[in-house]
Amino acid sequence: MKIVIASDHAGFRYKEAIKRRLAELGHEATDLGTDSEAPVDYPDFIHPAAAAVARGDFERGVVLGGSGNGEAIAANRHRGVRCALCWDVETARLARQHNDANMISLGQRMIDEATALAIVETWLTTDFEGGRHENRIRKIDAE
View 1 (cartoon, rainbow, N blue to C red):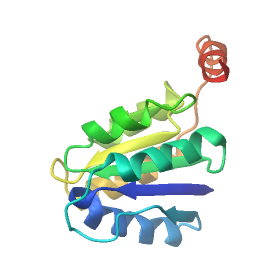
View 2: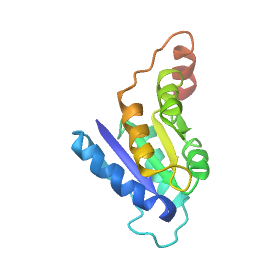
View 3: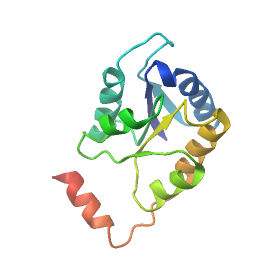
View 4: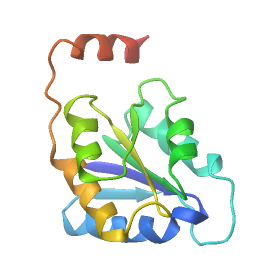
């Protein structure tokens, strides 16, 4: 799967760990930054990642920050992006299964690294169950 990943300084460490795990799992991960823990403005990195998912350049996207809140808000400003803030495996599973989330946001200050990795793996391996909301989701994305 082609996956874009981006973070601000507060999510940098987990971004690096997630990139390694994605490669181990055989996914093609493209890192749009940041490249250190030096302070940066998260929208400078999150907007390009979300735009790339919205355009269809990537199947999925992972964004990270301190809490993940700002990153999810920024990503969801892009039509066609459904970015879910996840804080455990269950929220990741439901984000895919019920909401067809094509991006997730994680907060490095909110969860431990093992949980972050488990969230990403669960989100990647959970299918959207479709159903009555599927057409509405697709219609809104297309508008």
